[in-house]
Length: 295
Image 1 (cartoon, rainbow, N blue to C red):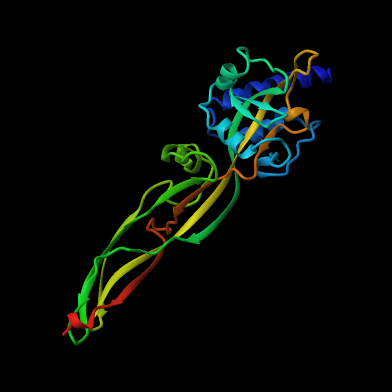
Image 2 (image 1 turned 45 degrees about the vertical axis):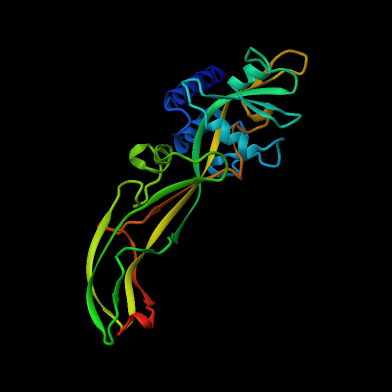
C-alpha cells in the first residue's frame, strides 16, 4: 500500500509540475524548485549547493557549461520543455534542431552524445545596493561677471532599468522584465523601477561664483539582483552500445537541478523612496570658465 500511494503521489506531482511550467523557459525558479522537491522526494539526495538548490556543473562536466546553459535555456520553451544534447567526450552542445541536422535524424542518443529534456528557471544568487553613475540633469548656466550671481535651475530625471548577461547575446527588455518584474511573473519584490518608472522635475536657486558655470547632477541609488539560470531535468538518456538508458537525474547522478556558476544575469534598477520618487543624491557640478571670456 505504501508503494502504491507513493506512486500515485509522484504521478500527481509530475502532472502538477508540467502544468505549472507551461510558460516555458522564463518560469520562476521558486515554482520549479518547490515542485521539484516534491517529485524528488526525501529519498533523492538532491545536492543543495547553489541558488535554488541547484548543483554547479562548471568545471565538473566537459565543455563550456556557461555557454551550454545559456543556449539551452535561451530556446523557446514548449509544453514538453527544452531539449539539449551533450557530447560527453568533446563537451560540444547542440540544441534538438542542431542534433537532428548534424548528428542523427531521430531524437535518440548515439555514441558520445547524451540527450536531455527539462525546464529552465531563474534562481536568485545575490543582491546588493550600489550607486549609479552621476549624470547632469540641468543645463549649464554660467556667470561671466565679477560678482556672485543667483539663477534658478530646472533639473529633471527618470528612473533607469537594465539587465546584462555574463555570456551570450544581449538580453531583451521584455525577457529581463519577465525575470525581474513581479507584475510580469518575476519573483523579486523590491521597490524598484522594474515595477514602474518614476521621474521628477525640480527648481532650485543656486549661487554661481564669478567666471564659473554650474549644472545640477543626480546620483541614483540602485539595486542589483543577480540570478543564475537553472535547468531542471525531466529525462536524461544515453546509449553505450547496449540499448537506450533513461534516468531522471543529471548524468545519472543524485541531483535533478543544475546551473553553471559563470552564467548569470544582473538586473539593475533605480531604487524608489516610499513616496514613489527616485532615491538618490542631488549635487551641483561647478566648472571654471576661461578668464579671457569673463569681465
